[in-house]
Amino acid sequence: MTNLGSQANKRALVTGGNRGIGASIARRLAAEGADVAITYRTDPAAAATLVAEIEQEGCYAHAYHSDIGDPAQVRALVEQVAAEFGAIDLLTSNAGVEHYGALTSITPEEFDRVFHVNVAGQLFLTQAAAAVMPPGGRVVLTSSVSARVASYHHALYASSKAAVSALVLSLAPELAELGIGINAIAPGPTNTDMGKQHAHSYTHPALRGVSPDALVASMNAVGRLAEPDEIAAAVAFLLSQDATHLTGTTLDVAGGWN
Figure 1: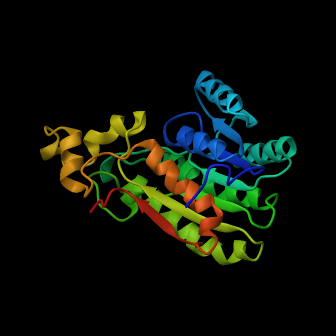
Figure 2: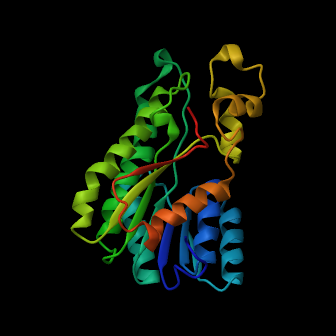
């Protein structure tokens, strides 16, 4: 079991850490004693509020503006964080973009945007972080239950998340040579602003008169949306010393979604 204080003196980078699941992960790691760097693309006020909250608990925190879909910005981000924090021991790649759209409507520009952020962003972030991460480092990327469960008009997003699961599987032996573990989480529908915004899109249009909560209850063994803290707990486990023999794995955190 992960314990409070178990990440003392560790330095964590959480992308997309100013809201939703990312903010919950940042709070959880700080509660376990880690100093935490978070990134944001929009809403600097929310990022500043979270930094102040973490520092009130006795850990160091800093927020960085970065577009994870831009490899140059990703490299600069990792260099900044490593310089300020001394190194990066824990990396959680949480930033991503959602997409729903029929096959006939998908444009090359949409494809580039989704894959640049969800796939290339996570790949180049891992590449940069691995260069400054000491042995014993842990990486958690973000896939999605959508990579294995069909949702209507969700092909572009789902394929980007399936690519993330393939990344962690294939990078595991290479990073193991450096003493670094890498895994992914695959959340299902979660009680965040983004989750609520897209909840109505999870099923065929014929069912969209049904409330999103009722739809989730019918498709999820637990019968409800996940809470961000529940996703954060799974990430904390994968980043902990309790998970040192786990690598190359994608962990579903979807309440038995089927």
